[in-house]
Image (cartoon, rainbow, N blue to C red; front, side):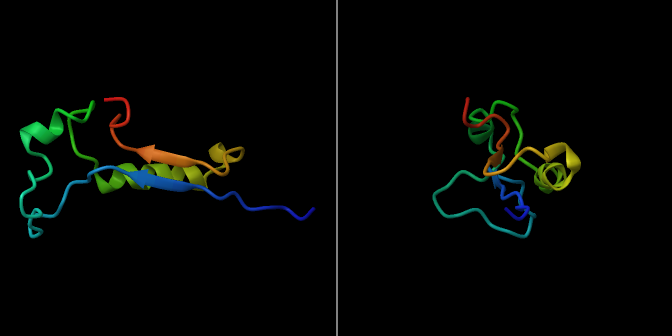
Amino acid sequence: MPPSAPVNVTSAATLERRPRQEPEPRQAPPGAPGHLTEIPLRRLGRPEDIADACVFLASDASAYVTGDTIRVMGGGLIG
């Protein structure tokens, strides 16, 4: 059997937005106090949080990881 490449994906929760982007109508803007209480880490994700997960998946440290989703959600699934 030929060597196979690992196939993984990252999944992100709400990330910080650039100030020029407007929130959707009738939605609390990301980072509003009510929204942050739903996230166990009490902050929005940052682009570098996703980048760190991707660096891990591209490194030798993830050599035995395949067919998985790395959820970068600040604990949102356990909150």
